[in-house]
Image (tube, rainbow, N blue to C red):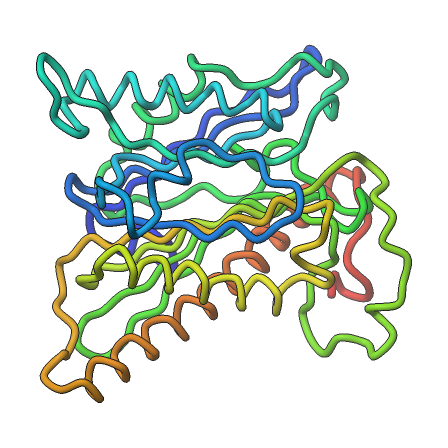
Length: 316
């Protein structure tokens, strides 16, 4: 399906509110129990929750859910709802009497885009998005465009509509690498060659702060350090898709999840390196494609409604 859900066991749930002052939402990526994960945060204005727990040097290596949300730092409260849903399902780090779900989160800035600056996601929307992800089933189609955390997204200093996109790449040996992106960037999308003068153009934020959030998922066996490196590689795809990227006004964050269903060739040190380089190169490309997919999905709706212009001739 050219989607992150091509990775077996990965499920995605969206919840959004539009109207009556609202234009925001939550997206939850729900992996199989035991999925290993890490993160790489590179934007200058990040809004994140529990990302320190995903460092390779910390105690817990697995991730129970990833929450992507609107509402800036206020919206990070939605992670509590997803965490509650996971606890009810027994998903989490076992402690006496219960479990503690590991639910990292990251937010985009969309405050006030629906008219009410206080209309932002909370725990209830996080819970609903987690439940929706679980209910979707394996290999489900992922809704794209202005849904979930992408409901209020805009890009290119507020000139165009942003949204959610997804992609996947299949490698030899049955390895699949998928990505899901919430595109709310300061920069503009790069569909072809970047003009030599692009870096010199004005980049003054027109509508608050910005962010692109990404989740990479693979069915390969990776440890936490390898997931960290895969998340880092994903930022290369982000930089190829958006110009400029990783600015002081962006909160660019990339998560990486490994479900551990397919063993990479590690028969020799050279084979291990080739396997990881191939996977991480695919991760960068999957991120690039997911970002551009999100731009196109949002554009097709917003231009039809006459809300935002198309990207150049024929929407390029």
